[in-house]
Length: 241
Image (cartoon, rainbow, N blue to C red; front, side, top):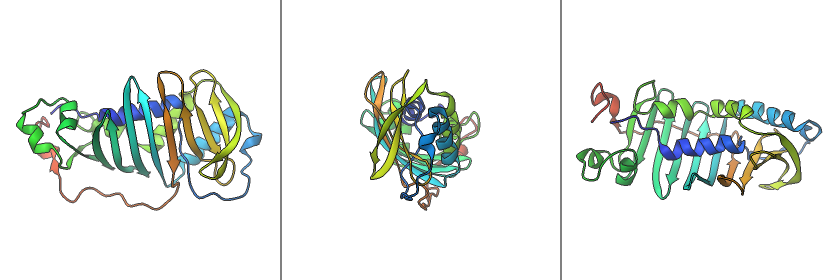
């Protein structure tokens, strides 16, 4: 089996970075956090730092990238993640633990990942949890390299154009300040009370568009490997079933 990149997952994360996305959505504390008095770049930097120290977050949204429609509902907790992604109607579930990734998708997912209709391998893997190492060179290496909340947040510090303040509003009932990317488009809404987590990102123009919401910051969640799964690491040194 070739290296499984998880096209929907990686495409979704690429758009997240392109839109200047961070995170958001915890229960709001009521005290003003002072970010409105900072420069746009300082506001974003403060948000990224806050996000890096958060325990967990849920990212939910729908985006269009390169003509593909991508949906995601992913929970991040430390070095772990779990959720569901889709690309043009092809859906798969994902669980990520330190050193290992697990996916479950139907025949359409495995065909999209390079399989051919009628291949007995697809019948073996379809609708079954499949796990593998995220070490370099392994089938699920891309998940280990790309699907980490801390790494994602760090990458955002250089993935945007000039920023400007775009007014204030309420997101999920919480006061927020908007930061607009004047070059690439898209607006990040960052909480002005409690911890300065961004709450939403919205982009309606350009090649990559969509809305992503960041919810349940610091909400306790349990992420564990599936109880049973096909282990690609045990199917042969080449990783081929």
